[in-house]
Image (cartoon, rainbow, N blue to C red; front, top):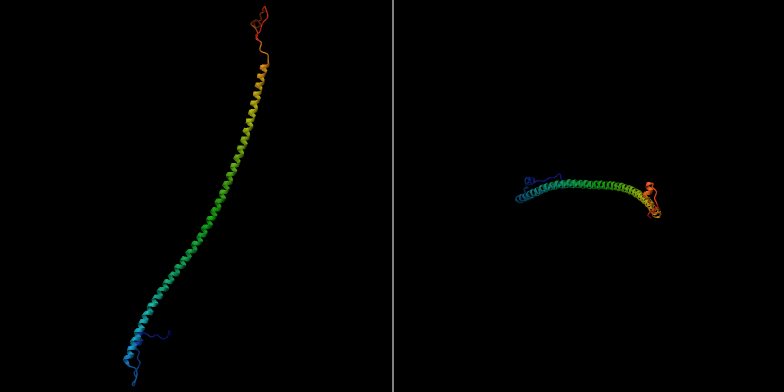
Length: 178
């Protein structure tokens, strides 16, 4: 469409074809045609205006959709970055918890080993004390048995008589009980 030539319905209605003296166009038919062209131009102008308004609306909608799309893409990128940061943070936290747990477990194992060593030493000491005590009891028991055997093998006691105790002389032999 040539932008330099703009024909409006009013231009068509006012256009003067000029009159020829001899032969020419039928003025009624020219007027009828001009009216039809003007009406068609008016319809086309309204259609063009409607289409331009719709296009403007569509452009606005497209702009709004692009802005929303950009905002959604930005939000998606932010969400992905946040997800990645959260994942990395969770991994760091998990690694830290694992290290702390291992350190605590190692400390607990060291303490348990130390306690076991102390208990083993204490048990060994108690076992030595028990053996010493049993040895002492055996020695005492053997002494007691030796004293009992010596007492059993020794001749019986001799009891002095009254006369011997009083220093008096008796007439006959003293018989001591056996």
